[in-house]
Length: 126
Image 1 (cartoon, rainbow, N blue to C red):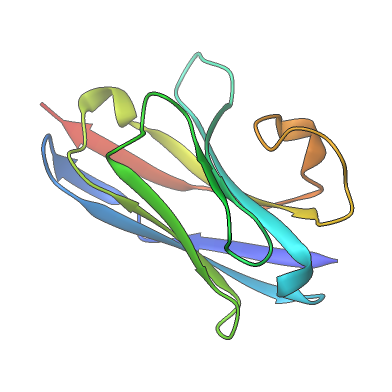
Image 2: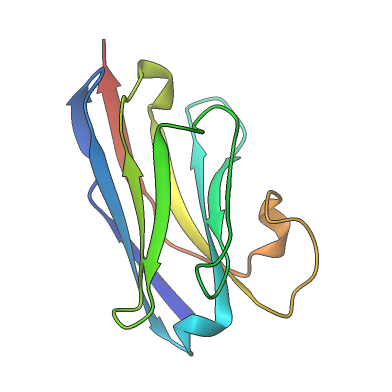
């Protein structure tokens, strides 16, 4: 089992920044690729960003590319999402998720991730 706890959400004005953190406990964190997803009211959960177990590769949704940065610190069992130039359409509950490095498939699809956090609310005002 892997337990994930997100933090860092809040209310910010358009153009502002937030940094989300996701602390993991349980099994070896460095064995897992990590992803961030988000879900806005009335919409399906969507992929935001992912990072491989070593941090060597990152992936982003087109809607956040150039504004968001995913990173991880395996010594601290934590993955981060730095969000800059926030827009009202970024408003959502943000979830971090873990998938074991041996699991095949696309990083962009939620069904490959076995463990999920409880989510943290991000609200961007215009």
